[in-house]
Image (tube, rainbow, N blue to C red):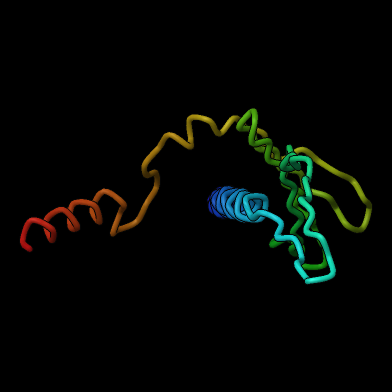
Length: 137
């Protein structure tokens, strides 16, 4: 049970980081203006592209062997809805194709936590050390 909890915690954190990086890259790519090609024989034209909507949901697939039965291959399907701040995790048995809902939760309040289940140095300890270092200099 503890192993599953650790696995799910790592999975949730990985997905949150993945969604952050996807949105970061998406914002950088969509913010770059299109540069027209200029040549003496070509009249420059302004190219207007309609805004592209970012994906509504993020989906991740990862596979692993069942720790209790190494011959059993399982795919973890994770769906994150950034709008509603929800995450849903499914297990798919790759041999049978059976999909089972494993977990579903609203992560809105999770995102408000500065730290939870953190090991030393925790974010607050680092912040305290940085303040002390700045005051010394």
